[in-house]
Image 1 (tube, rainbow, N blue to C red):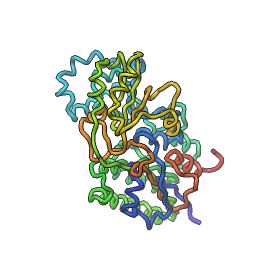
Image 2 (tube, protein in one colour):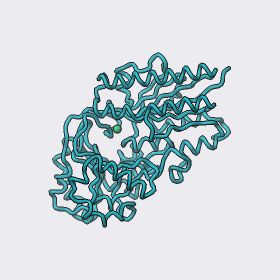
Image 3 (cartoon, helix red, strand yellow):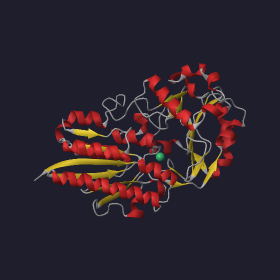
Image 4 (cartoon, protein in one colour):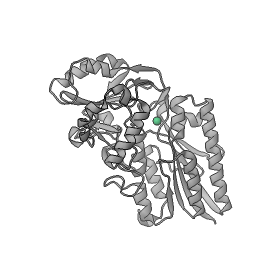
Amino acid sequence: MSEAVEIFLFADALGWEVVEANDFLKDLLPYRRRIGMQFGYSSTAIPTILSGQPPSIHKHLGLFRFAPTQSPFRWMRWLGPLLRPASLWNRGRIRHWLSWLIGRLRGFTGYFQLYRMPFDRLPLMDYCEKKDLFVAGGMDGVENLCDLLNRSGRHFHISDWRLSDRRNFAEARAALAKGAEFLFIYTAGLDAVLHQSPDPRSAPVREKLEWYRREIEGLLEDCRKAGKTPRLTVFSDHGMTPLMRTVDLKTAVEATGLVFGRDYGACYDSTMFRVDFLKPNAEATIRAALKPFETCGHWLSAEEEKHYGIYREDRYFGGAIFLMDPGVQIVPSDMGLEALPGMHGYAPADKDSYAAILANVEIPPEVQHVSDYFRLMRQRLPKSIL
Ligand SMILES: [Zn+2]
């Protein structure tokens, strides 16, 4: 029997709806299943995939969190006056360049983007992805995939998330040629396509799926030529929900007259508002201000937080979380000033939220949720390291 190669391909935003609408790779990957999304964003799901742990353990939910005493940006409070006029410094390209510069200055090795976080709030914010999650020791005391593979003694390859999808396939094929027995290929291009064209049958989506097919066929062909048996598993972290409407929570909260950083602290993600109440009156005032939005969103209960794996006694992610209904985007948010045609980060039980797993080998029945991928990958390694 020829030697097996384990190939795990992560396709960001390849939701179950997209898979179903296109019968994606039905011939090559006949074993397929709808998968429960990790509550949150890719920045939440990726650490879950790489460690098998929920956010309550790995401590990644939104990219930012209100934490004045732990902010790596405290030094920036002296820069405030220099970053005026805001209209100049807020231009996309300039924020992008500043993100690069700040990341370098702070020695961040993880994915870092300022997005639209206001400069005057940045010194009050912590950032969760300071380290590269994909490398050994990247997850602060939590074993990640790279740690596990190092321990396994297997010849492995993990993509560099900084590279394009095309480069990542090319690098994986090169690693295969050098004898890699375990590949983890990272691709995020489909997510960008679906944010702009959330219709699973749209031409840009079909084009990207066709591109995946060609790349995957190339990879399988390489295996065949090398006399190896590819065990290929494609998995994703979430789907994509088309835009229905936007809500401006920020104006409503700021109209209360409460002062940010003194009375309350908050992060406005694209689909959820995470708030810390700092003064006794702040909670009732903010809850009252958001009352009108309870027709299209709700405050998460402790039970929901526990169910989603995000509950922490210390309220690390925020004292309370207001989640929008599927299709409702918070605009403006700390992530963007305009709505996108598609967004994710809603309730996992919504049909557009579901992720997917597709394979050419049987998928064990216990793989039902994004957090189960890590165990699946572990099962495919020599038993001696388990
Ligand atoms: Zn996305």
